[in-house]
Image (tube, rainbow, N blue to C red; front, side, top):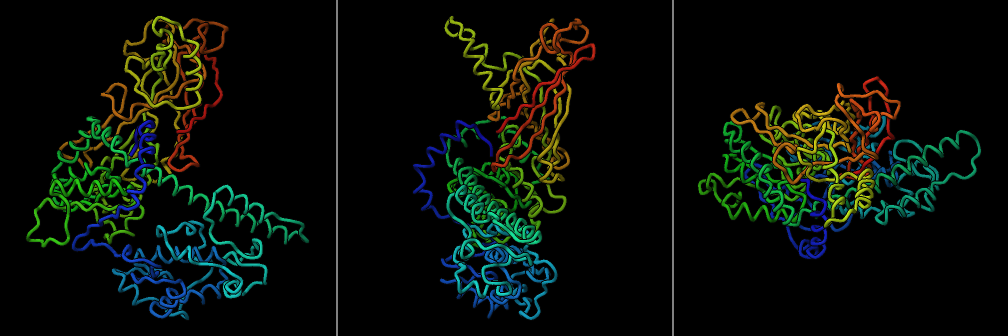
Length: 611
């Protein structure tokens, strides 16, 4: 789900006017015989950790957990000396295990929630040995979106005596046997205010004053770092949620979806891969991650899929996809008897992120035959939706199941003057405005530009930067560094003499290979040499253009390499693409070195871009 930056601005503007309407929309979760809604969204109040019962107060909920599920929260907190954050981690940990039908204490897995609840240990048989299994700060992030229980927990003075009584007054346990300095008179709850205010408060309250003895100072530093880590985790979780809300909200604009559906290269590739491979799709259970309008799910249903779960994080688009499927007679209706169903009524639309699908509907682990997603962003990895696809692959796709597309490759080449805006500014209604063009080009050397580069403006050979195998890759592989060489193209488009290279342009190809698409493999290319797509290409402009010649034309000179007096015969580039600290963004660094025919070289400062 990647789209033009201008389109996103328009979408965000429209989103503000539609906000009240969207808040009133309720998702209509559809189910089927064995993949029905788990009921977590029904009713109000606080949801039990183990079953679907809800309560008006945390005290009633915890009493229920102790009586019905043998989970004595207060006893565990007291015996382990958990502080507030330890309690938060414990709750999220338990919810994560219950979602997998696993015992939170011993880890044993069961086939149903009923079996799990029958198994749960009595308090005296809890098997907590060594470090608690919820020590990782990942459990500070709410496992269940908008979990009211987390917000209802408080740590007043009375609760301090019960929660962590194994340590002295004025101190509290970090939940793993390490004493933490107090934050004011009591521990604060998870912050909900401004992120910068939270970090500042933690830094202020956790500042270490004078200490007696090296041991105490060491302990204070350790616990101060721990508390700051907790604060940052909380701030990061809130920041991620804000970015996600804006991200999914931006796709509430139909203009973006019109652009995508109107991208014939993009939509035809998916249509051909899905409809052109009947042996893959016929009778298959299909998961569509980031469904948008639901076009890929419609293709899958038409291709003969037996079940299609279409997932989207935008409430509005999930509603739209549901209505579109219904209008086309493809929406699954659990209230219609099996003998009355038409074969194509298979699409179930779910409003959720892929990572939280199990919280919305019950799905068998690794229960899908095919995973399809149009996840690609600018420069392939912008928006980082690939991580959601990999999560869905690992948790929901059958071993050996198909993922469409299953390969992706980032490529690049050097571009000439025509790939910049300079030619436009050199003649504006007969006037020379090249001064403005130079200013614009200078700005482009600090920010990536998404635009179409004409094939005739590519001046070097194409280089492959990196290839991904989506069937096997790990999420960490999204960050990579590539080194490659660029020489002037032999295609004949480069005129004799000096050619100026103004920067590097990147694009990507995705493949629906014969590994899964045996009848009809398909390639979706965003290359400058192919029909333009809405992804265009991503342009990285050099601080200054580099003069290049073919090796046999090089003239010796004492001038700097890459100038008109000593053109380069080859460029060596090193590009790193990593996920940025800002959620869904990427950082790109470009290092460039020019080499002359006599072996001399010249390097330029590293350029850093953020997309």
